[in-house]
Length: 174
Image 1: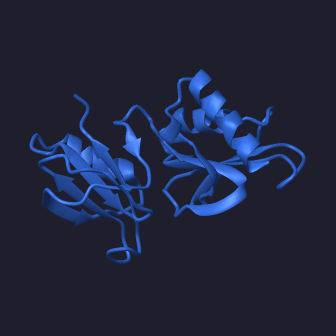
Image 2: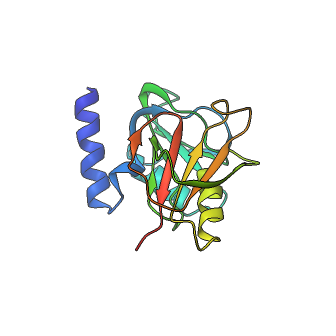
C-alpha cells in the first residue's frame, strides 16, 4: 500500500512540475494549523498547490480519505512543525517562489552568522540569506535542537549536504 501510494505521488509530482523534495510521503506535520478543508480528489498535489497559493502557508499536510472522514483533507500551517512518520499522510514545505528548499538536509560549516528565529519557518532563514550579498547558503535548525527556538545559520560558502532530521537548507540559485 505505501509503495503504491508513493509511486502515485511521484507521478503526480512530476506531472504537475512539483519538485520531488516538495512532497514528503509517509509524513505528518502535526500542529500549527490555521486552515483545513476537504479535497474534491484524493490528490496531495492539490494540498501543495493550495499552500503555495497562500502567502501565510509555511507547510501543509494531506490526509488520505477514510482517516478524518470520507474525503481527503488538507491542513495548511503557518509554521513548520516537526515531521512525524505516518502512513496516513503526505506533507511538504511551502515553496512560495523561494529558492529550492532542501528538506531534512544540513549543510554544516562555512557559517559567518547565526541567530534565533521568531517562527519555525525555514523561509525566514532564506529571506535573511537573500538580503546579504555574502550569503550563498543557509541552514535552518528546528526548535529543540539548538535551543527552544528555531535557529538560522548563514554561510559564505556552499558546504556539502548531509541528510538530517534537524534541519532544512537552501543554496542561492545561480
